[in-house]
Image (cartoon, rainbow, N blue to C red):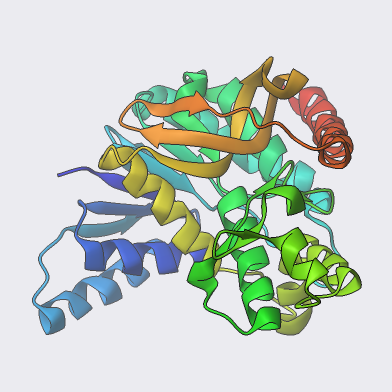
Amino acid sequence: MNKISLIGAGNIGTVLAYNLSRKQIGPITMVDVVEGLAKGKCLDLSQSLPIENLNIKIEGTTDISAINDSAVIIITAGIARKPGMSRDDLIETNFSIMNEIGKAIKKFSPSSFVICVTNPLDAMVWSLREISGIQPNMISGMAGILDSARFRFFLSQELNISVESVQTMVLGGHGDTMVPLLDLTSVGGIPIKKFIEKSNIKKEKLEQIVERTRNGGGEVVSLMKNSSAFYSPACSAVEMLESYLYDQKKILPCSAFLNGEYGVKGLFVGVPVIIGKKGIEKIIELDLSNQSKKEFQKSVEAVEQLVKKCKKLLV
């Protein structure tokens, strides 16, 4: 069975551990620097297994060497946003955490498929790759799946239809400059522009939904005050993990290393990729509209500014 290591025992890590334990994909190791936190949560989770007749090994520890020989490592460690904070405000603190984690991955589990969830996402996954030295196809950031899910949910609510009928994708950096692709959004196979023409949804309302998607994480933070989203990010990371372990070859919007694709080189930015047993097996280049191209470039520039800050922090 495939060993899965979760670094961070906060809300996202906890939901991940629960979700993965029910799927019985493989033994779970949870690591957190807070003494007793991961161990206590894993003990509690382990004691729930007999109730559902599940058998799987779950362990919690403060010792990061326990990630050794993991098939997949999911990183959620770091401070979360509070009301009034942007993802970018977390950069210095979370970079120092990624620095330690990256060194541990390099030493104890350099062949793992690594999924980063920590914000600011694109800059943190870039930092992890630089520090750990792992191959670019074996590390990715979870962002576009979550952002796309939010966009689909908001559209389904407005149109009063099943979310399964809404197909769309959100690209770019995981922040206020993310790019919901309206020109590639459809409802039951019908382009969203046709819905606008039939007055099923007004253009102004659609623009409001785009902005709500961009501020989706901030809306949750403003409501919960002392926490950020955790159910939806955890589910999104699991989809990436399963596509890798089961060689599902799903097309998913993820933060991936670009080496010339979309005119971008040396950055991690949200784009559609195929995830299979070899990690990021292919980056899919879409023909974007002129408006989407402009928005995507603006998003890339925002990511680039954050990465410049991370480069200064590298020692």
